[in-house]
Length: 476
Image (cartoon, rainbow, N blue to C red; front, side, top):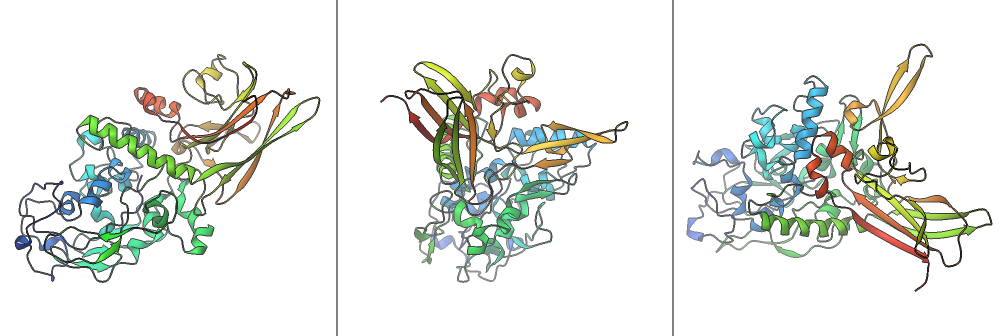
């Protein structure tokens, strides 16, 4: 995920070697040079250090660095799903995508000339940092329309931050309106014009949202202490420099919690045990985000002798964008309904087939006749559709594609900001002892996408989040 980096840079200690101890929280004050006239990265004398790297920032900003290190901004250049999807898009378009995808997932690697076919195993160290600190903190302007990496990064500019009283030590600092704006997020969170589709519209949704009208920004929900809620932040120092008095600041989280998480063992750390622990903590944060994003507000039944009508109301609690948002062709938010009469299941919708997929028309089990089509399935995932003209009839046949770059239009089924949508299910007549369980579930990728990308070994890594559950009837 590529949400805004809002690092509160207020000063760094002198770093005269190419290796940085990222666990250090203090430096010797005598080693700090007094040169507030420094304005950018070209003022450093040691050419063996890549001053674009987040490791350069870590010594004075250890908290922000450790948060970013676990974030999906850094994972963006490590993700095997992204690599395989970008490679497929490149092949399927005969190379026409170029660096369209990697421009957001690996901005500095793209600036350094890495082609769009470069994968994680071959990326440079700086490229593997994905959306690293300078991508946002040396972003000085953006072009129109916003999206498709529409930012200008000036590596000679002062570090851009939200404050006008930053202490300038090893680098210059400047107050920036862009760094605190939704436009910076939108630079990568609107994706369009290849091949003429609006593939991601998170920023566009925000522009038209109640949150925008109220002045609530992307940063307020995705960089605060509780994911998905604009709450007051704790106050502290944004940098750690021994012997230097630094101002107190509202502290922003640089984990940028979104709906994605790592599917590989050695991220965020080479130590797989430490990575596993960090990934589980990330999932608890995602769970909080999702519970703050959408819920079940009401479940009721209407009975008659012929059938039972189940009414379920799902509400988007988010005022800033649709749910799901982002690459909604991949995001699965669905409703599972199970009805039991004693030990017997008399109705089920939203359950999974033998391969872990929903029982829709893309299910291999349904296609093979091994599972029944779920005709009442409610899934808020977008549809990628391709129209193929029947010349003899003059009307198109419409097919669903797995990937948006194989389609010519997208049908979105997500919930608009603050929308409450009523769903209806037709059930058989039920006894008073019947128990109805309604669950709202989410996962960021369906298994069939991984298999189509030849990443079937990652299916077991997918995690289903149970966002909400309501039970009606049954015996206690």
